[in-house]
Image: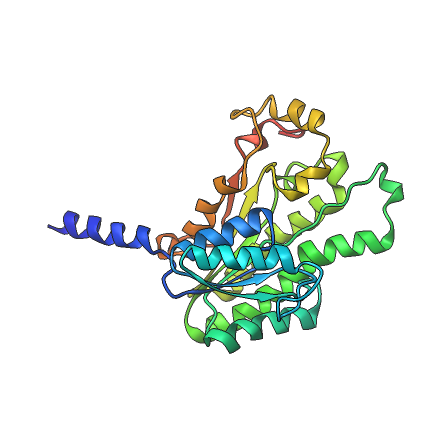
Length: 275
């Protein structure tokens, strides 16, 4: 009888893992961020679709991608608002959090997905401005959002923070050095915030390998093919193959998971330089 009850609970939980939860997804205008937003909405979440350059009224340079994500969220059964604040800005982070709370009165999940990895031909050509921007988007912004959101979650009695890292954090290559350094810092933030915000707030990271999204358009496909040839799965991933990780970490199924870095990379970490 207990087993049957357990099965019924599991079935309900898997159908609507995020029912009524308010979720911020940064960098949600495209790629992995969009996929996360749509998947969580399909399980009942209400989504703040953050994308740089989009006005809070949906008007701006990136209004198209962000609004497309918002429409997809609604089509999946969720609610959505569009937010254009810069994740790298202290004030932008505050406004983003306030937008969620002002709209729905609560905040349950944060997905720190926004990121950038510049293309360069030589390390010496990286400007100070570009280096600072990489650190700001990939590390500084997530730190500030974790701090602001974490305080609210602690006061409310619970919540989940999900940082989107990269296998570059542990297997850096010559073409992503600043990005790798920032993502390694993000992994460290994940462990530190898990301690700081426990026991009721969980903080975890997803560490993707190469995924074929908007960011991959700047990659050398011949180099990618050569690298993935040694992966156990022999290929890069697509955005839909990572959303299950976010769904697990956002919902109650991960109630005993915190401070973890969950790798989703097709086995890449065992095949890349330094493995």
